Image (cartoon, rainbow over all chains, first blue to last red; front, side, top):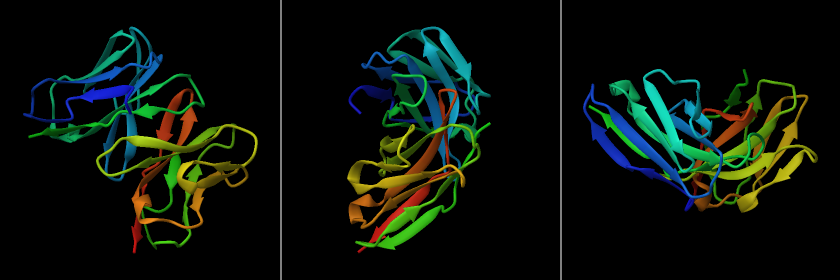
Length: 113
Length: 111
């Protein structure tokens, strides 16, 4: 969707290195989310943000941290990448807290070797 | 906590046949329910959502879903599928502002 972009689209990294994925929105939406998608698991929530500097953990937050210093940017950091973090990562934004649904980015395919 | 179960991981169907993708959720309290579609190598797009009111919800691309509170189900249907409907479909429930997704159903439409 034009209002949300993720970078990079693809990345290969080595075990033990830190990695940062970026989500950028132009919609001025308050709520932002990071999910990971794995076969057989659907999408699982990693972290989310309900405003600048306001973040919280999701279902699978271990090994990940986030930051949101501006409304438009939500960064996901893998502090020390492991092979189990090989996945497709999706960012999503939402205008409202509940019932509105999300707009998703195109995803980042991360491979940890 | 809410959970969502999509009862079929893969659904093969011939073109122009009807299809139903099944979804059950765990809670009987008021919920918001969604269906998303993911085409290959793309993000997820919203197909339809149920917030309140009529239990039959119509979405894009000819899809519809029926909310059944007593059976805690939200099954997705299309009366006649096209090759272009081949994709993965995700059911989701909203819980305190966060979407909880099912495992996904791969719909494969064959000519």
